Image (tube, rainbow, N blue to C red; front, side):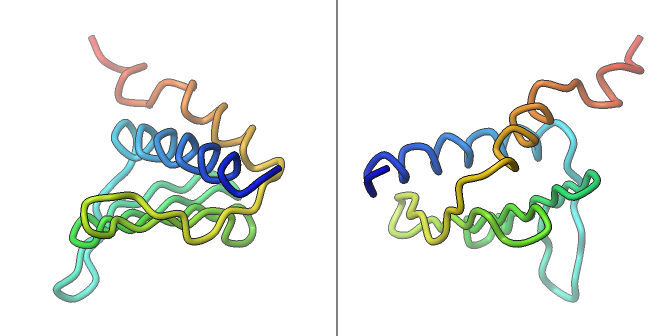
Length: 101
C-alpha cells in the first residue's frame, strides 16, 4: 500500500473515530487541559479539541492525526485488526440512543 493510499485510509479511520467520540465520548479534565475520550475493551480514542490532535489505541498506538494550519496530517498509522473493531464500534448505537424514549 503506497503512502497516499495509507493516508486516505487513515483519514477515513479518523472520521470514524470522530463519529464514535461524538456519539459516545466524554470530556476528561486534566489540570487546565480537557480532552474527549472513549474506551471500550482494548479500544481507546482520545481527542484534544484545543490542538485538533486525535490518537487511537488498540493495545498500542495505531493512529495519530494532527490538525496543522487547517489541514489534517497523518502522523502515525498502523493497519490491522483494530480497524474492524473501530468500524464495528462506529456502527453500534450508543447507550444514550438505545435508552432514549
